[in-house]
Length: 308
Image 1 (tube, rainbow, N blue to C red):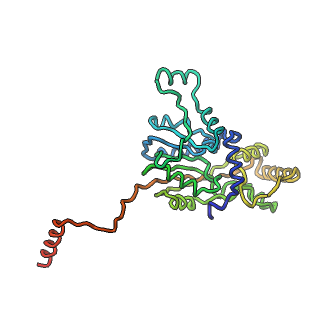
Image 2 (cartoon, rainbow, N blue to C red; image 1 turned 180 degrees about the vertical axis):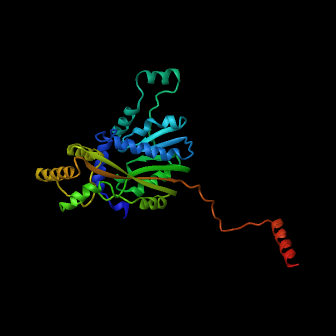
Image 3 (cartoon, rainbow, N blue to C red; image 1 turned 30 degrees about the horizontal axis):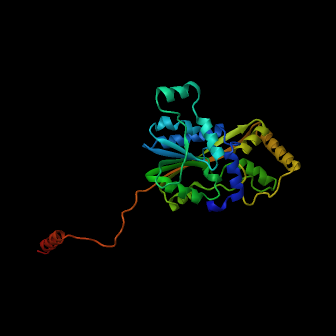
């Protein structure tokens, strides 16, 4: 599967703009749990970044941004969202207030520990790029990974999480039973993500995955979570608004499944974790080999010695 052909660019832009506006970028227990598990992957590596970048923090709930100063107290923390409104939303969430702000600003002389928007896409600007639950919403993930590779300094690290192909498999089975199209756009396999990392300027990718399962006693809570966590960005999705009859049929199918399972709906999320490195630049190849006169004499003596 080509990751660059799975998503409608217009739908992707609208969804990411909605998150940037703060409509769906708030914390959620599932987002926070995946962020914590991705952080565990990061802590297994020996890192001492001078600067780090969080890519689209509102897509992943932004819970990790409050942890960077504890993990890497000397690092400059940047984030990237595509709008001024989103930048203000991220900074407002993580700005210290009250007594904490006074202690840090006046007593510790450190000023407010607020992440700052990335000023420019300058090469070799950061040592770590972090992305939680954002990459599967990008209409051109190759371009995004190329940007990450450009931003990283040599031996820098990219760490990310995203949904995998088995996400919402129970919901997809219900849609198939009703002869409806898929409820979500296709998700990319972790091996394809690893290939894409290498093809776009990174090296030594390490990929992992796991399943997380949520259960719901109420159908409406599930519907609310689905709306909060994502959108169907498939180019082949239904091209108009669904009517009340369709929604009623869908809800009845979910309720029937809940009853069949003994009162709790089960929904699976395949979570992919990955990290990769920015390789050191290779030395320039001139096509010429220089050998000093002394080295040539030594080589001739060795040859004569072996022939004798």
